[in-house]
Length: 380
Image 1 (cartoon, rainbow, N blue to C red):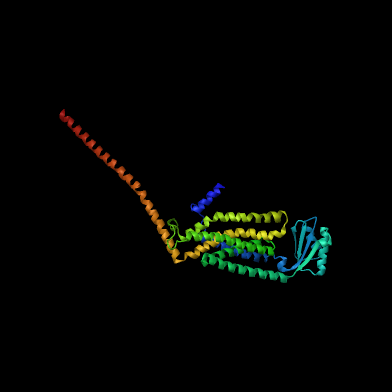
Image 2: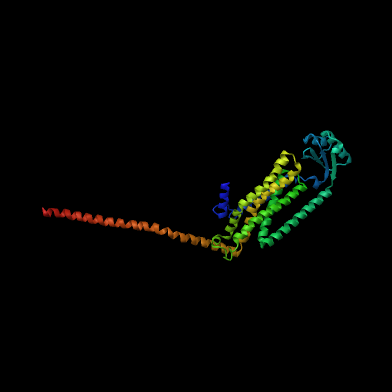
């Protein structure tokens, strides 16, 4: 835990940093590639696995069964001669749901009787109903209409809140990537698309926007006063893009903690409730939320933040501020450099003087020695 706290402190102070903004071309290229792949997945798989609420059909619910296995239900439907697609799901302990294509009255009675015999229950324990495709089409239209209205209102509100349309556009880019990747992942897994899954998608959009607002609030705080030079000197030493990247790193720990807190209960529903306890009605909702939370967090850091930095980087004021920050950084380096130069230069100069004196002393000693040798024969 202490290491994680130190990790967060290093990110907040700038001693450690992840290049969300400096490598924005790489991250945005990867995001675009993933969006294309997500769009191709439903095409390759032949579309989405739409539930009965969207396609229409017949539904049977068998209650108080002693054996909750799915094979008896599948065999019961097949034994009636129905060769169409059918889905058998354990929606709760002791409750089985069977969904088929649209059946006529005789086929409905035959399937109901087969289910009574397969699960050894009374006839009143098997309920049947029919969902028409018109009702499913109405749900689809309402879903699309609600999504468009939600995104439009969100874009306007965020533009007013941040007082700039560029933050609103960047946040919408992050939401678009989140929706595309979540839908692609959902299609890849093959889970049935139900109204619960749509609710999960809408919930994920709200979560993704919340995480983006947290990061952009810090971006606005770090960049306040940079363009007019009113920011404190430590902040002026960083360029606009560096401050945006610093804000993303400063909120990284919070984003991780928020994601983990959100994933724990959703993961419990998905892996424990649906997989182990057989609560099949929750898996579509849980999968949409689980995948969406992961993609939403990543989209905020690797899409929304880099897009905002890219949109602002073309402004003349931002370019001038980046140049001033570079000049300040260069001046700081040149001021620090002479402090070490005298030490390096003085040492050879100081060391050369003893060397010259030693040479003169040796020369004088040699001359004195030669004169002394020349006087000896004269004395003798």
